[in-house]
Amino acid sequence: MKPIYHLFAIFWFCLPFSVISDDNYKNLIFKGCANQKFPDPTGVFSQNLKTLLTSLVSQSAQRSFASTTAGTDNTTAVIGVFQCRGDLPAAQCYDCVAKIPRLVSKLCGGDGDGGNVVVAARVQLAGCYIRYEVSGFKQTSGVEMLYRVCGKKHSGDPGFSGKRDSAFEMAENGVKTGGNGGGGGGGFYAGQYESVYVLGQCEGSLGNSDCGECVKDGFERAKSECGDSISGQVYLHKCFVSYSYYSHGVPNISSLSDGEKRQHTQRTIALAVGGVAVLGFVIVCLLVLKSAMKKKSKYDAY
Image (cartoon, rainbow, N blue to C red; front, side, top):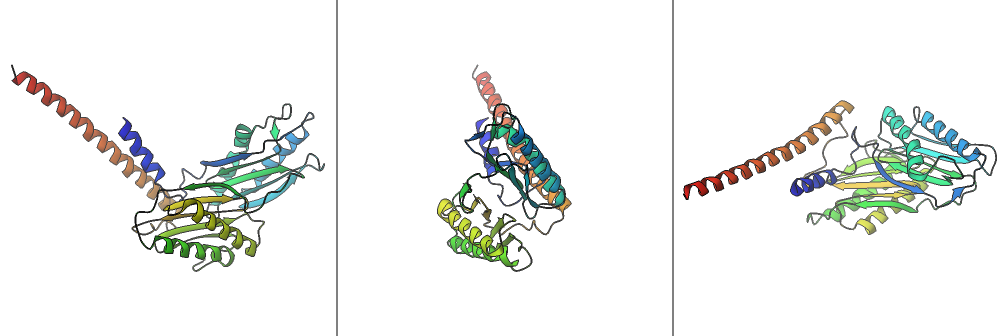
C-alpha cells in the first residue's frame, strides 16, 4: 500500500502551481490570524465583521477586487479587502470568495462570544483571498512575505536560471504595461518565456509603479527562498508571484476555452489515476502469480 500512496503524493505535488482548474481554485493556501482578540461584549465588532464579509462576497459577483469598511465608530469599524486572481472567471471568483467567511470563523475564530474575534485575519485560497482588520490596526509593509512554497530542484537544464530570470523581468514589466500580447496590465500578468510559465498579481489598490516594485521584490524572494527549484509561489502582503518550469515546453492551456480546460484537466487526472490503477492491477496479478508458483513448486516436490 505504501508505494501506491507515494505515487499519488508525487502526482499531486507535481501539478503546476500556476494552473487553476475547476477543482482547485478554492483550495486553501494559507491563513494568517492575529494573536490579539477584540473585547466585544456588545457584539458590535462581530456584527460589523459579518456585515463586511457579506458585502465583500456580494461585490465579488460584479468585480474581482474591492475594499470596503463596515461600521462608523473608529474603535469598532472593520476594513476589508477581497481579490480574485486576474484570470479567474467571474462566476468562479464569486464562488471562491463566498467560501472564505466560514473559513475565517473556522480558522481564526469568529463567533463573537466573549471577544473571540481576532482583530485582523487573512485567508488565502488558490483563486482569491479576503483580509480584514479593525480600524487603527498597525499596518504591515506591502512587501512583507506572508507565505512561500517551492517545488523540487531543477533537472539539470544549464539555461534554467537565465530563462527564469528573463521570465521574471517580463512579468515585472507586464503587470505595469500589459506585456507583449495583452497578458497583463492592471496589476496582473500571466505569460511564458521559453520553458517558464510566470504569473504576477498585485492588490488592486497599488498603482502601476508600486505594483512593479512589489512584484520585483516577490521574484527576488522567489530566487533567494527557492533557489534552483523548478516552481515556486511567494505571497507578499500586497502582491504574489509564481513560476513553473517545463522541460518539454509550457503546455498550451491559456488558449483553451473553459470547457476545454475542464476536459484537459479531467483527462490529465484520468490518465494519471488510470495509470496508477493499471500499475496496481499489474502488481496484484504478479503477487497472485508468485503465490501460485510457490504452491505449484510445493506440490511438485511431493
